[in-house]
Image (cartoon, rainbow, N blue to C red; front, side, top):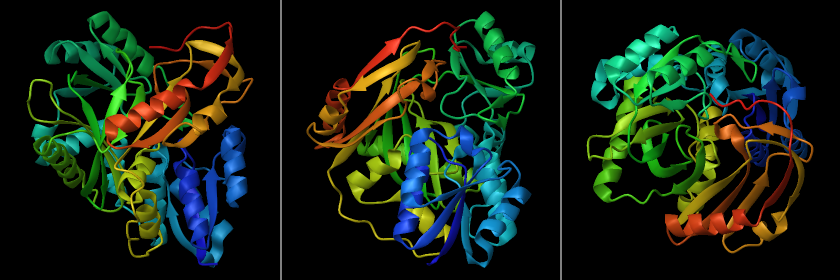
Length: 420
């Protein structure tokens, strides 16, 4: 065996399994540290068992505990420690520093983990990238900030991802209510939250993510979201259908943001909005990890560049792997949303979707019996389809047609919705 690599926690997006599967193919043993194995979805348990990845419980919020657990499970064979899960990127970066293993600067990752710290870091060297914003401690201050910035505004928690508790607010009563809800949320998925609220001007225009490595842009992804006031991401296309000048501006914005926060090692996923009125791009956020939502798979299919392979090679100190041949000029992912609430009673059409033209991947995240309540975030999605095409729009059409073959049967359930 080449050595032992420890990862901290696992998202539901498939990024953890991709990394573990790749490392296993290179001859590495893999372990994922989780605070509670029982919390993991069944498909995660099945996937990691098939790969041969061990799941070990530890206090994944504490770098010292992660160091101790990594040493215990890997001993002298430990050659890498990292995370592909947003909430644990800082813990992993700090633990890797303590162990003398490759990884990003933990201070830079800490800046990215807090939207307030990220805005402050960017303001020091590239203030033009930030929209008008404020970080506040209570609902009164949120309303005052919205009055200064001007409606509509977007309210966000400082440290969540996946559009959780993110909402556009068109009046001050909604600003107050959403701020109180964010302030009243002490933990999410077991992670303790900072009790602050970000108030930002609403940026009207298309949103893109820039997939980067070692501080440089690899490519640009186009995002499509559901109806406002929420920001549920329903589709991604790669490469984004942008003209050359616009793509340069988006790439430059992302690279300037990475320089501002000091993130020069490994992967990052930087979200940028182009102003609808033709104004300069604005930074939405910086994530010190590969993109979620299967975006790295879109990049690999369309370019042959494997961002996960680049990340894992860097984490164990190997040279960057060379790109392989692209599978198609473009790729897209389309997500399927759940209803407002319901108990999943049956799923059909999976084989039909998988057999549709140009389809690369079909995945259903929920199982029969799951009770689901929508709350206006990316966790409101039950399945996805990835497809390729001659261009980004063609790839999305293939993904949408295949997704339409999926049929979910839901039974009514009692209970209140979790929308803010």
